[in-house]
Length: 297
Figure 1 (cartoon, helix red, strand yellow):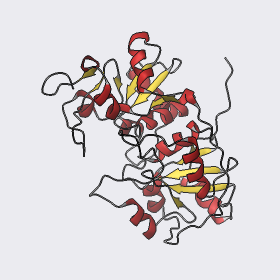
Figure 2: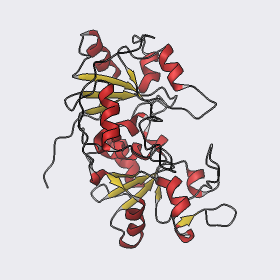
Figure 3: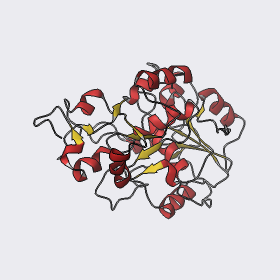
């Protein structure tokens, strides 16, 4: 087995602060605020405009998606992604650092990390600890919007990191992939409702294993160590030497599974982009498991 050298998936707040202080920001290093919050809670773009990491651009996940899809947060086209990140000054030679302002330390940033990777860009990292710890440690902030010089980005979809409804359905028979769901246990079991969801009952795909994404983070909002992450996978009998698909509600927190596995040396976890949002609406009833009203979601 050939062990490939993996690009660092995490950078520290100290490293980023020093990079900014020494003038490293530019075409070779771009920072993105990828915050998103449930409607009626916090306003991500407003908060960005008031306070963000110096030089950071706002990555609007509502804009950079397939807006024509009936499902939530589906990937944009190659051209759509390339045009969007090019406007943020990102080329194929840029090191991209992504963070968000969630109180957990990280929520949407791993989704954007995975989006860059699925479109063929390997030099991308998540800010470990997020904006929460950037503020806590007293690093500089600004309200000044960044105006990066537009760049040319060429996106090439890596199909190995993406799974479709048809592939996951086929996998129920072939069982070639392990399937891990990153939602909370209550939502996975169907005992708690899906938040802000109309016409979407909770539950899970038959045969999936539950690993709530919050378990990958420390109470202080940092990623747990590779040793701790391996222990979590082992406890759920998930074999990191075998193929793995991650799923959730809309393909966002599933990316935390991909990131955790990557930190354990497994870079090939695929994300089911449609996740439960699509599965609930398309899959045969017998493939949807729930403790809810009828036993089937």
